[in-house]
Length: 614
Image 1 (cartoon, one colour):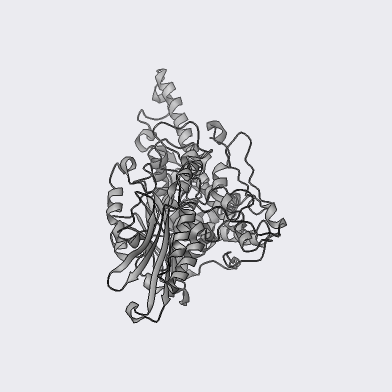
Image 2 (tube, one colour):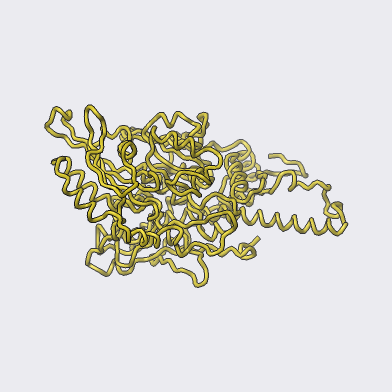
């Protein structure tokens, strides 16, 4: 049923342009730093381990016995520097670690320390803590030389500590105060919008910190390849996703942030879902370790969405999360997570054959991309390549994805067997039969339709004049604007005269996945509504005494026994693989989670004289 029938606005996305960036030769100022609730210095002592040697905090902010472990995950001694993100007790934390060689045998010729801050989560998904990264790294480097001179810490605390009047100002940017929050909500369901999930709208004339985690989006695609799609589906189901990696952890923390953003549900789409559906975003916990095991156990208990811990809000507690860890013991406890992502070791980048991340469910059940995921990923990469090759694109920067040669397959046969499900025998039989029966016309028609669906996800994203225009009277682009607007002028920090379209790749990736999410949930919403309409019509007919015989079916209806029927055409419109059992299970799980209904998925096949042959 058409979206307009249920009052669902069509999702039309246009990415914003930054005309002022290209026309000015003056460097743009960074946005104001978010005020901090705590500042601390952690030193490594060969006898006592990591200890807090200096700290300053607001009353009631606990640091001892907490930030030492969260700020310094296992394995940092093997790297020279790192940035670590974490959450703690309603705060977002960021610490800058440095491991500097010194001529001091008492410290084993190395000085390891970290300077960190806590920022209230009321400022967004990560409290915009990344804006402090540059200053923290500078203070850590200076303290590595003169560890006893803490005057820079004192000055930074006095300048940036949160003050009483700042508490009132923070409410303006808090999720609950976001002007895009719906005024009328279904009873019992909180639909808070995050004001900074990639995210907060920047005042005109400001630029973004170069340490914003979302600038790893292109690296995310390059690292995971087609595996990004099963990760995206797991995130949509609000699974507990654990990324097991090695130090340094900054990239893994960035990936946590990215996946959480990509799995956001756009506001217009979220408004059509069941009132009991999961939150509109996946909860990011960032870096966790063995000391977080009690929290993870308690969070998984029933009822934690009511009385959960304050890290990211009570309404999100117990609803799934994504985090990264360097403690292998967490990867072995498969009761703590639903999906484990094992990253290849750092040295694998020099291997002859590419090492891919490994995805698995509890009990070691492997998770792979589908054949449809592989085709979609190639389409996505080709779209990004065209985007960067289009007129107006600036030269490639170090943090910009270098598009692969799309004339060759992205994966060779060995890599495809490693990360992609094999083509099923049913699919082989169907393709062979249809090729014989239609002389290849049916296959070409299906390929053209699939390509058209993939092209729709990139529609208008490659325009040189990408703009985000808020439609009058409707919030159709509201969620995407809050997700990408803070990414607009980042590269102006490195090149004040950069072209306005220089950041299009990252913006397009966010828009692409938000459209994919809308495609999945919107298609299922149509199926659910059309089934509900049929139920009402049949109930009206039966209520008039005509009986079920007039309906051409026995009194016990199939929809009552099996729930909603999702046909193969609907599965294809969702962008899923019609031959994949895992995609069919995903569709059933989405219907249960977001619409509160049971569903059965009809696979694709061929019938001859009423007999299904494949």
